[in-house]
Image (cartoon, rainbow, N blue to C red):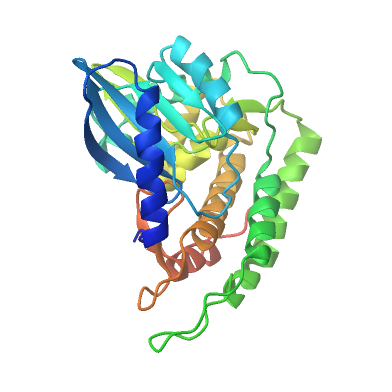
Length: 326
C-alpha cells in the first residue's frame, strides 16, 4: 500500500515536473503519461518530437532512504555505455531530475523469474554489473552500514500523531527488538566468512527485482539504480532470492550461473545470511519511508515494491527463519 502524497507534496511535484520538462531533448510540445509513483520517485513517459523518454523526479517531502543521486548518475552512465541501462539523456543530481530514453520491454512473471534459463541469464547479468567501470569516489555500503543508516533515520523520526481511528504510531514497533539476537547472529556469521575468506566488495545494483528488470528482445536491462553501491558480491543474488522466494534448487542454479559453474563451498550459507539481511532492510525501509496510515495496520510494499507485505508480515517472516552460521 503506497502512502498518498499530501496536497503540499503534490503541488511541489507539479512545479518540479513543469521545470524538469526543460531537460527533455527537443522543442516540440511534450505529451506526458504518468507511469509510476513510488515512495522516493515519480516517473512519466514523455513523447517529444517523435521520441520517447522516461522522466524521473525525486518525490518531495520523503524520508532519507540513503540515496546518493550524484553517484547514481555516474553509475548510470557506465551502465548505459555497457548496454545495461537505458541511454541517459539528461540529469541534475541536486534537483533529483533524470531523463533517459524510453525503452520498451517485458517484465518477467514470478514463474519466469525462477526458470533455470532465466536464472542463468540473471547470473551473467550480475557479473556484467560487477565488471562496470566505477565512477570516482565509489560508494561502499555493507549490510550493517545500511542497517545503521535506517535505524538512525528511524530514531530521528517523530511518532505519528494519534487520531480517533488509531493510537499514536511509534517510529518502529517494539517487536523489531525481538529480532536483535537474530540480526546479531547473522552479522557475526557474515564477519566470520570475511575473516576466513575475505572478498573484495563489488558493484551491485542494490534493488534487483522484477519491476526493475526489462527483457528487451532478449537483452536484459536494469532500471532504477539509486541504491547502487559496492558490497558483498552475492548481495544482488540475495535480493533476487528474497523477492522471488526461490527454493534451494533455484538458488543453486543461480549461484552456478553467477560463478560460471565453479561455486564455493560456503556460497549457499552465505547467500541465505544475505537473504535474511536483505529482508530485514526491507522491513526498516518500510518503517522509514512509508508513513503509517489509520486503518492500514502498517501495510506497505517491500523495498523493491514487488510484494505487498505488512510490517507484521515482515516481522513474522524474519522471526521464522532458522538460524544459520558458517
